[in-house]
Amino acid sequence: SQKIEQNSEALNIQEGKTATLTCNYTNYSPAYLQWYRQDPGRGPVFLLLIRENEKEKRKERLKVTFDTTLKQSLFHITASQPADSATYLCALDSHGNKLVFGAGTILRVKS
Amino acid sequence: DVKVTQSSRYLVKRTGEKVFLECVQDMDHENMFWYRQDPGLGLRLIYFSYDVKMKEKGDIPEGYSVSREKKERFSLILESASTNQTSMYLCASSSGQVHSYEQYFGPGTRLTVT
Image 1 (tube, chains in turn purple, red):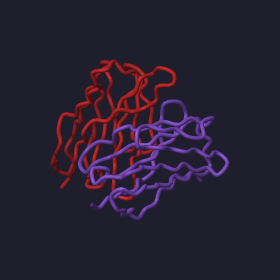
Image 2 (cartoon, helix red, strand yellow; image 1 turned 30 degrees about the horizontal axis):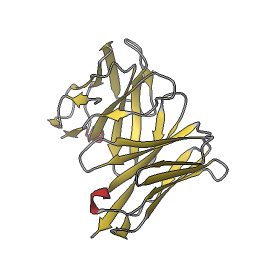
Image 3 (tube, chains in turn green, cyan; image 1 turned 120 degrees about the vertical axis):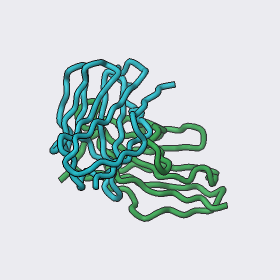
Image 4 (spheres, one colour; image 1 turned 90 degrees about the vertical axis):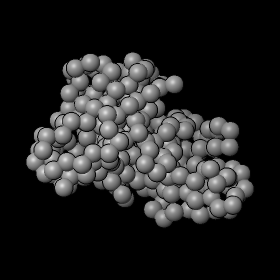
């Protein structure tokens, strides 16, 4: 069956460290993968998109990698801040503009 | 900035009531989506629409219907609300342009059915 898996346990890290979140998938062949941030009680906000032919993408303190052989994407936040605390969702394409989302990983950055 | 608005942030309805959730986007996007989000399950797609008057079932359409009479507006209808439809409902839109696949979400409607 098709599955997208993100760490179900919250990730707790110290301010200034790099946070690394994982997204694994099975039985999908996505052309691209996206990461979203969601704050409590709000809708997700798009962060980054990476295509299947791209190994890595960066935006300010964010970095995403995409390994289609391992069927895995890693999402890194460098120099993390308490304001980065949120739930992070990965999503991959399934038939055109339709997305399938993971359940998300809660990140808590402590000062 | 893209703006997606939803008609209510919080809604409480009784079992058996007909419920309308409205979503409006102001970016002339072709695609619109309705999701529900439950703890531990993530976002699940209920229905989506690629164009006015067009709709397609998502992964969990049972108990729901939709309407898209105008490009900017996409409505989700619960014909007879049940307690298992208590959830956070999120609307999203995206451009139909190639290589522009990110979705823009509204703030969500937290629906409680008692």
